[in-house]
Length: 196
Image: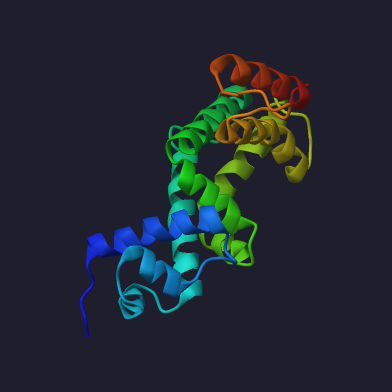
């Protein structure tokens, strides 16, 4: 049996992420990946049992990295404003500094692999965020709202602005760059919508 080469495995992961971002999950295949990496298909099977295993493991790895970053410096006991600000900053950091991985994760989350990936990685994050929301409501810093409505108001505008930044243009086709002024304007509107 052949041994694992950590450098080769990292090249495979990075090329797979690139291919998923550029071609989607449907356009992704092991033969094409091997060719892009300059290795044999048999070499891929040293690292992954099949295409599904590779996609699932990549999604889990990126997701853990993302969720770890989202909890960086965060406590469920923070005030609502400070905790939400921390979440925005952490999500902005990850999206702007790991753009390809963030895009790949969003693609995988919306794919048939999404539920399995999310189920594997959200335990501590989900519990921490639920505790934050409940504590904020109890302190009367957050209006009572369902989780889904909370998430869409709290983060929907941020992710829309980050997507416009990734595309480099606004909805009208004008050049667009995400900046602190836009971030603060959107954040303040979100706070108004969610606080008593």
